[in-house]
Length: 251
Figure (tube, rainbow, N blue to C red):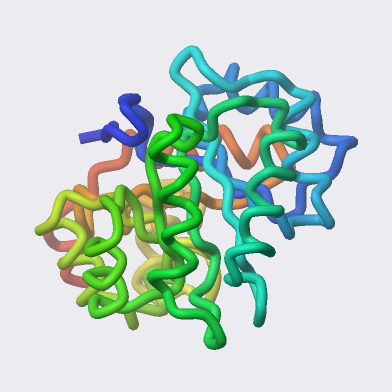
């Protein structure tokens, strides 16, 4: 399947990460949506807020486009008062009254997970946040979070080179949670991946994304780019079907 549902919208299973986006990239954001991107991922801390502001200025929310953002990154930022202020700032930066998908960016070691999520739950109960996610977590934390409110998405570091969260991927698939791997193209490319890309006349990045899409129907990678050419190449990975022999070679 080349799509899945998140925040009530059926979206293409390759999104856009924006941790390097600046306000000079407003036109790129619009081009990305025109090219077929339907999930744009940002965060309160990305480029000192420029990423959210650029997305807000681009005015692409709605009409089949889901905007996801995050707050609570860093020690002390999961405190209710700090997190609440970050959420309010995200509304302003994104120029919206409703956020489609909001993640707790990190579990604050100094604040109980339940207290941080209770703040997000307040906004969700008010209809200001549609769905909620959590990032950089294991299964135990996911299940603790689900005792507070429904969890629609989990965002962890995962790619063909780093499969440390295999158990979380499988758990998300079993529970109907979308798994969003960040840095989906980071790390060293296995020799087999390079060979497959050369044989198919594709990029290594496209094969890496195709592997992720095959790994689990719950996966929706968000490769970051500021190049419309690279973005189109990433979206083209949706059309690549790896053979059993190729999948076996990739392990």
